[in-house]
Every structure is written in C-alpha cells, then in structure tokens.
Length: 328
Ligand code: ADP
Ligand code: NA
Image (cartoon, rainbow, N blue to C red; front, side, top):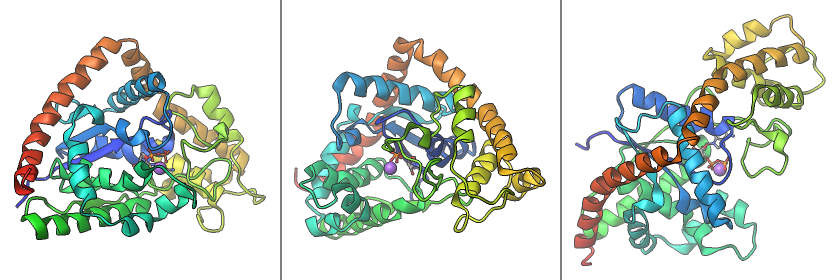
C-alpha cells in the first residue's frame, strides 16, 4: 500500500573507504539503476556525535557528496542533499525521542561500544532515534543496511508501532535490504578481526576512495594475512586472506568462486597484486570524477541546494501530518 522508497545516508566524518563504497554507496547506485526511488543524504547532523571542526565538516560534507555523485548516484532521478538542510529530520527526531526509552537506547550494542561506560554525549544515545526519523520522514519502505545495523532498524520498527498506537497509522515499517556478497563486512587490512572503519587510528587499515594507485598497491601489499601461502576463502579461520578475496570479487564484479579461480596457483603475495589491480581499476574512474567535481564547488553547492528543496518537498508534508496528529 506504500509506494517503494529507499532511503540511505553516509556520514561525512572522514574520507570514504572501500567498505563504505562497496557496502553502502555502490549498493545505492545499483538499486537506483534498477529503478528504485532513492533518497540519499550526507548525514552531517550525525557527524556531530563526535567533536567536529566546523570548516572541516563543511569541506568533508561537500567531498562526500562529490564521491557519491562520482560513484554514479543520479541526483536528478533520486534526491541528494545535506541532512542539516531539511529541518524535518531533527523535528521528527524530537517526537520519536519522546516515544523511546532511555534504557532501550542505552542497551544498543553500538552505543555500549562507543560510550564504553563513560559519560557520553546525549547525541550518541539519540543517534539511532535520529536514524529512525531520517527514514520515516520520507516514509521509507526499504533501507539498505549491513548486518550490524539490524538492531537500529528494529528500533525504528518499534518506534513506528508506538507512534501508531498513540497517534494512528502514518508510516510504513521500513524493511532491511541486506547484501549477499559480503559487502557489508569488509575487514580492516591491518586487523582482519575488526571491520574497516573511518575511525581506525592506523591509516593503512583502510583504502580511501581518494587514494591513488600507488597507495592502493602499498596498502594491499601491507595487508595482514597469515602464514599459509596459498589462497582460500574461509572468513572464520582466515579472515585476512578471505577479505582480499571479497575485495577482489567486489572490485572485479565477480563471484567469490571466480575470484578464487584466478587465485589458483598463486601465493598470497602474488594474489595481492591481482587484488590491487582490480581495486585500482574499480576506484580510478570514481576518484577522477570526484576530483573533477571538487574543482567545481559552486556546481556542487547548487546541486545540493536543489536536492534539499526537493527533499523538503517530500519531508515537510509528512512532518506537518505528524505535528497535526501530535497536537502541535
Ligand atoms: P564508518 O564505520 O567507517 O565510520 P559509517 O558508519 O559512516 O562508516 O557507515 C557508512 C556506511 O558504510 C554504512 O552503510 C555502513 O554499513 C557502511 N560501512 C561502514 N564500514 C563498513 C565496512 N567495513 N564494510 C562494509 N560496509 C561498511
Ligand atoms: Na560505523
């Protein structure tokens, strides 16, 4: 009964890495190419859950938008904008926060990890509520997520039920879109027991979309594997080598079995060159398009302004209905 709508976001907290690219950006691009209506934004409000330098945040927001466009996001067919340009996100967040309990939020694993028992900012606790508002304000029917975000989507479903109980039906319950190609769990190149992350202090743990060919090759060459010389795919027992197979298959658009076939007879060291070639080939066009876009900041600002106006045209009527239901 609800028209399909896919909503997703990327944080501008650091340069995007290949985990973000294969796990989020490229999936959005492919959904959009299949005809899914895509609402995609740069989550600059979310970024403030960690301390931000204002000028740096603005620079990164623009850079993130440039990389999304360079990755193939179609800003005309979909809607692309900065989260802070659409006040309905934060306004709906407030009402949803009043429906959530502090205990429920404090129990979420990502909060427990990031707060680590310390006196964390309230924004960190509210983060998943803002995520719920981010998608509900567009009446999202589908949200592309990784397995580790399912709990946040369950919170969203619970907030929808509570809202409906209090104020009447207004939202679809967004369904998760999970990938089946391992793209939601790209591992750190330096510690394959961890996810690749922007917040890792070791710069060689991740390949950035801005890295040139030489740096990509160096980082793959330095990737931690194990002491078995041949290549196999066994994420539990051999996370480092398996991560290389996953990266190879994603970059070359092959099945893991096909990637493994190419690795046959190669040592891990030799295979790393194949993986690096595939990554260089996949990332070079994205990097070059992004650099061209970043040379035209006025164009980027104009695109985002236009996107924000279209996003407000979607979100404002939904929030107006929420406010009316809530007696505001
Ligand atoms: P990070 O964890 O690097 O700070 P974000 O939290 O901003 O990245 O996540 C942005 C998007 O990228 C999310 O959809 C997230 O699932 C995806 N993502 C982040 N890290 C990885 C990873 N290591 N592998 C696959 N996808 C990832
Ligand atoms: Na993350």
